[in-house]
Image 1 (tube, one colour):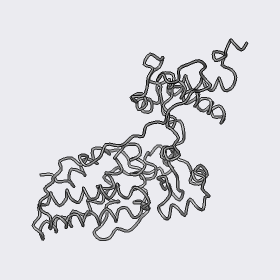
Image 2 (cartoon, one colour):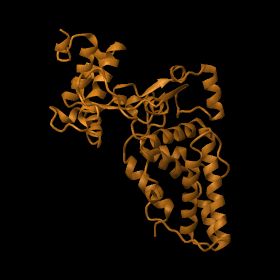
Image 3 (cartoon, rainbow, N blue to C red):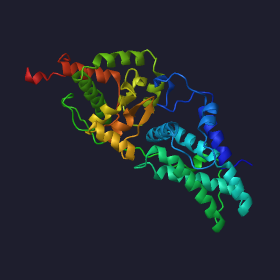
Image 4 (tube, rainbow, N blue to C red):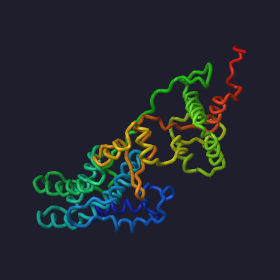
Length: 338
């Protein structure tokens, strides 16, 4: 019969399949390091040996990837971390089973549950390099606690049964925009249009509308199906009759996925030296990852921390907003003022 460790291993193998694994930025297409192993080889390198785990850059990156993916509602890297930690506990769990006469499946279920709980409890103010050791200690402690409390019998069939549903923060209330005159901004369709046009005006202000237009051309040509499919499923979209309804995208999809640590510190209003000091203490407010010798911060978690909504917009609305901001749009003129 499969126990929690076996189910966890199979769950991760199903997620990763034969794809290359990147512990630096999570996506091999965005990583500056060209060589990446498949998960079988990556796992063999990452699995802890028996004894106290030592902090390494690989584990620091793995935990950082787990935190970043958690914010997206994706448990891939969280489960990779747990799989690699729990695999090092197979021998220990077997000894506990034999010495204390406890069912092996129960021991491993307790270990996995304790590891997952520790992962959630260390999400803030704990340096990534310390997390694997804390998970391991909590798992061993939970297994021994069963010896003094045999009333709880839990065996899981699927590791995801322990996962809580992700909480998605609601977007803050929208306000009226000067881009639409005489419209009811409380109408969901109008509010949706406002989001796009305000984004276009912001792109124009920051001189990046040319790049946005090229991005829109790729979307309209069908070269970004992964981006548009994710945005088009969002329940907040209100205009089903819009031409090109599958062209929606998230603002963060247009932005670079990662920025350098100095730029992130500046955005947060921190001195660069202070930011690096917070990273060493584990108090830096955003997840970060190491790519070679440099530290980088993912844009989406940074936007989340700074309360910047990752709005879903349509290319037509963005371009209309940019035209209005540049003074070229005629359809927004109020004839009563002429």
